[in-house]
Image (tube, rainbow, N blue to C red):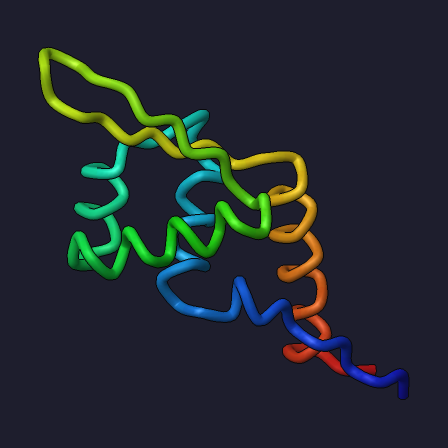
Length: 97
């Protein structure tokens, strides 16, 4: 039996995993969309987006739309790779050989 691989601590957080999972299925998502889908508070989701940005799993684009600030998040190739690796490693936990 080969040893189980460590799960990425960045993605192992429920809210960060939810954000990345959403971004895997859409090209980009506005802050308000992510907040609505995750049910998180503005402050909490903001902190988690910052953590994902710091490790370059997502890009964050800030601009204005109709004089209101708009934050758009996009998953990066690094984020896609990290998510795929996380899922692969998690499957080992579900079905160890």
